[in-house]
Length: 227
Image (cartoon, rainbow, N blue to C red; front, side, top):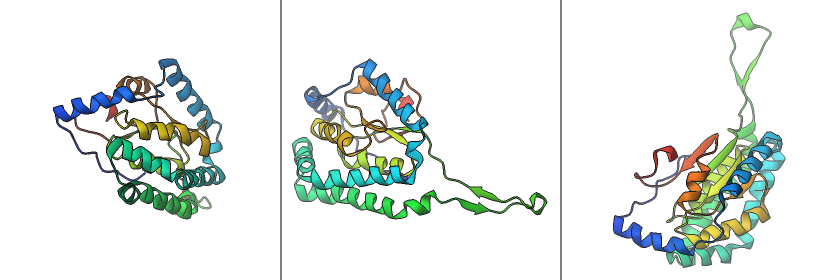
């Protein structure tokens, strides 16, 4: 999974202004629901189905269909959250995601292929290889100012690697968070790819559970357990 840029920081005054937006968020999960979500993701991964090339291709294909069929809704959400014009939204977020998903589909076979490695002569006739393995259950925290791109770009990498994934969008971009929550489960495997909506309290609840990888995009004052 490639390294992603960190979000721009905000002043305390800007942060307070943005906090007022969070009161408009919808779909926040209760603590019990968070636990059920994590358990379902763990079960989906341990079933082994996320490892297959067919499953990975299906999820990436579903994401591409989502971006195509719901493009207008994505543009509207980004406009309502951030005032982005559709041309800017396509250039900086939607268009890049389409390119990344297509690239992952194209390279998937190469990424999954075992790599032969040298073994000493004393081990003859044995052979050796490095086999790429998924990390497991992955949690993605995205940020408010690139809410679609920094939710779905790491999701593409995590899916291509065969992981089960939870995405926690920022509550400060509530329309985009709702867009993701409403649509991801319709286009992708709803038991292995989930969107968890809510504020900081939901993030804290998520971090009480075991994750095999956490990807966080945010600012320097994030809680230590996030980074």
